[in-house]
Image (cartoon, rainbow, N blue to C red; front, side):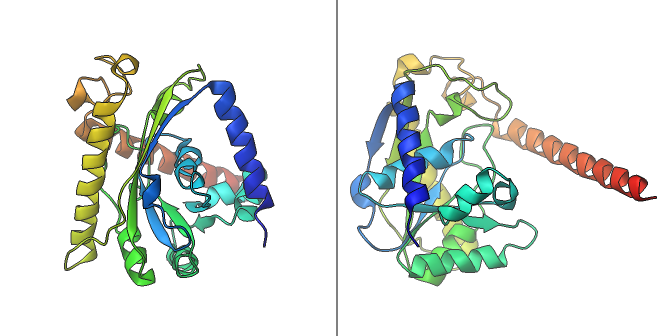
Length: 260
């Protein structure tokens, strides 16, 4: 199967990048394997992260197959695009099939992009990580490669209006491939969390200071910004989950009433 759709999307993305005059700071491209499989463990701070994260490997002519929620594949517009780009659909209610598909991709030499936080971090720091990235890398016998994004949250993220103003700096940092030590997947995931947190700290500190002045909403509280603390972010996440559950329940009740 060819990747014509994927290359068309890349072309459209580059046109957007040029129109927005993004200033990309990409480091660590040499850590992307030329033709072998690897799990890219990516932090999640915005709705455009999958677009930006794929740019790092593209600098060495690699494509990334991203794991994304099933709803994206069910959508009439994005669904065909996701399938034609050979991304991996994740059913959060039953993720074994998507996990197995990701392992198969990795064994076939593909790069698989994973957001181990599962959802956007409202604090913009690294949230608690799921163990899936570590487990699939181990099952496929491939390394983990941490990839840290910074600046993407300024474009489109949770709880804030989108900002399509131009001239933003986008930082993409690709870490060295590694196989975390530990007796269990939980211990190894903790090591991954430490790696990603250290890389994020460096990315924040090296970001142009004039673009993240003290008090900026996109800057973590611990760095002088006004983003929610990790504790407050957890509360907001719980409130969001509650609203979603109530919405699903109301929808189900309306459907039952309609059938009655």
